[in-house]
Amino acid sequence: MNGWGAYEVSVRFGARQALDGVSITALPGQVTAVVGADGAGKTTLLRCIAGALAPGAGTVRRPPARRIGYLPPGPGVYEDLSVAENLRFRSASYDIPAPAAQRHIGEYLERTGLAAAQDRLAGQLSGGMLRKLGVVAALLPEPELLVLDEPTTGVDPVSRADLWWLIARAAAGGAAVLMSTSYTDEAARAARVLVLDSGRTLAEGTPAEIVAAIPGTIAVRPERPAAQDERRRSWRRAGAWRVWLPSAGPGHPGTVTPDLQDAVCVAALRRELADADA
Amino acid sequence: MRAMIVKEFRQLRRDRRTLAMMIVMPVLLLVILGYAASFDVSSVPTVVAGPGGAAVAKALPATFHLAGTYQAETAGAQTPEAWARDQLRDGHAAVAIVTGTAPGPLVLIDGTQLFDAQKTLQELSALSGGKPVTTASVTTSASVQILYNPELKTSYIMIPGLAGVILVFVGTVITSLGVVRERQAGTLEQLAVMPLRPADVFLGKIIPYFVVALGDLAIVVAVGVAVFGVPFAGSAAVFALGALLFVFVTLGLGVLISSVSQTQGQAIQLAVMTLLPQVLLSGLIFPLSSIVIGVRWIAYLLPLTYFTEISRGVMLRAQPITSLWPPFVYLALLGAIVATLATLRFRAFLAPGTSR
Image 1 (spheres, rainbow over the protein chains, first blue to last red):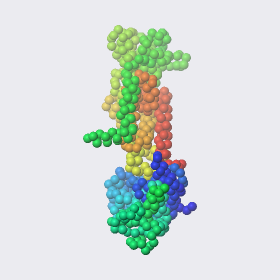
Image 2 (image 1 turned 90 degrees about the vertical axis):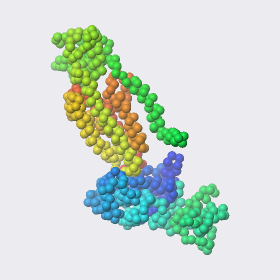
Image 3 (image 1 turned 90 degrees about the horizontal axis):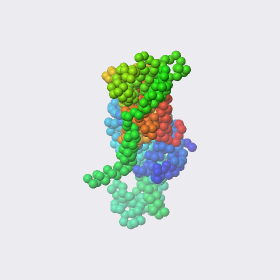
Image 4 (image 1 turned 180 degrees about the vertical axis):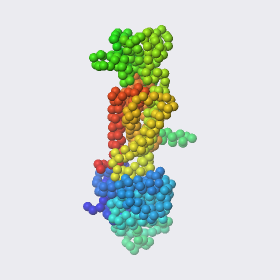
């Protein structure tokens, strides 16, 4: 099997099944995204793959620790060390030769606008800057597998662009990037997407495959549909209501071209309805 | 206000450790310390040496229990008095009675066993008809000599042990925050993924504090000697070796506490819980021999017990390592246990399910 990832991984925390037989592959040179609501199991899955957590069942394929870059859900850096000190600690822990480390550090800091903040304590950085520092630190070992837990959540648009530059660059450099996000527009930029819900796989594939897999069509309605059947299959989006019509053709009034977000909503609805009927 | 009270009780119920500390600890401490808290000396270990020693031993009041007799065959060229002095120096006895000396028998008292010494003086005073006994005074025709701490100063015996208490305080409490801080800051997660071995993390966490703590100890001892006039009679190298082992155990204990705690508050609670018994049971305040046997064994699990023994022995009596080796061995053993447990704990969250 090519690439890194998890195969049929399950994790249980006490009575709660956090992951239930989830598989994912992160290919070198590509960005693979994990999307899902809070508590869907994204963090647990990434922790398993990065090696911070041992799965209860299933197997994980990962490079040696020296070739893994990981951004945990928290800052992952020491708030009482400066930006430069944090990066020095990280590169020393990975035995990266100082000149190589310095070169990378300088370039990354310059590009992400952290250069001016080099001597500031990490704890004094804004949320976006802290995330950028975490990603830069994860990139230092030139990882074969880069695991990023919600690198862009709560980050301003400019910093998000910086972060995406770092992520795209890592992938272009040959790293297998595995990131989680709660934004479907971000996931749509990934080569492959895994949609998680309550620890189970809802959908998996390229964004286009996931969208194409929606049966029927999606229509926009100004009001919430009154009919019980349609009501169950509707959700709010951008000030209006969308309804999933599993058996309608493309000629149905109000039909829109679905995007990844619609596909994720439909996948969640299908699971919910199936569970309710079962 | 009612809402606040309910909320507080709810939180307290969740925080099992605090609850246990509030309910179980006071009872436990009272029982343990109640048995330990005793300055009363009921039996003073005594050796006799010289001609007619056996008769003297028989005639001794019940307080003095015979811990050894000079044997000419095994003593070699050593005189009875030299042998008796060695017995005191090596901590085998608190009192030595040497007969066959002029003008009368010689009673040697170890001044570092403060309570034993005081008890002995009381007994001697009773024997001599109520006159207070002081150094070199002649009673019942015996001459009395208090060794190592002739004025029976409390500071002499407290300061060597206090140096240890200060280290326990600084060492255990401060290092107990080490891992918890990483856990709370989320950096532990990062360490788990990084190519570091559990032993690297454990030693890496300890060594900086180790250096600081040893410097700290040197300062405390220097101040004790300079300000309180406590003698430093023995070998600095022996003392340093003891300090090294003791600091290692103390810091390792802190890291171990840290690795089993979820929050900084819990870590400090646990560290303080190890502190109180160390201070009260280590022989620093209450003499070990006065502690009931059922409680005394706890003292032998505490590193401070051994450090107090080493520091008093070396600083005050110039005790050589040849007779002081048991506490060194116990400290090394405790150190090995603590380091193993901490490394195992580290492995559990630093290398989950792998053996890298």
